[in-house]
Length: 288
Image (cartoon, rainbow, N blue to C red; front, side, top):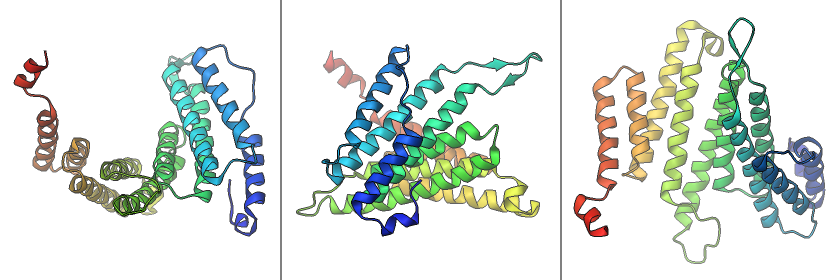
């Protein structure tokens, strides 16, 4: 992983150190798998790794390649998640599927690539997708290593917070004359806020006495997390008033807090947003 010592290195030295780490600990060069999808993804990773080793690419291209590399690792993880099957022991009990270890490892490697990318440039897409990778890693670990999963959910919250910060800045600068940086829309910022709220909700659901040290503090800590989640969802809706997912998620958190009437209001509001976005019957007839 990148460390503080990198601050004293030249860009060329940082680049060499980064490539050595990725080639030795992240990139797994192996015979092409027989599965067509897996073969395509591995070929893509190999090609990206080859381009990363090209010393002539610019810093911007380097960050683009690192981001694409991480996204491909996440795509691999999604593929393996979709192919996993239930594994049952001799007692008829469902046990850990070995695919889950592979999936968790791929998400972990994607996080390394995003961290390296963030050392070169600050981008909304880096922090947003990095947070998703951390959250997906946490989901895999919730059953077998819950304490580590809780730590990862906290990390995901930090990455979403950074994504919102960078996204708000880019969204503001987008309308300024001469701005040529990353283009971030208000809906993109709302998505990061919504996902941050979901991560806070999940973190609250996994809280135990061991994390809060005293059992009397557990309920208070959960309540604080859920209250923070509510603020994220409300802010997402303020920025994008038709963001039905944030409204629905706000309803689920209110339900978790026992606020049934509020929960119903937000869930029905989300339904109204979806309904209003659908074409009317007259528009459908005209389209035929």
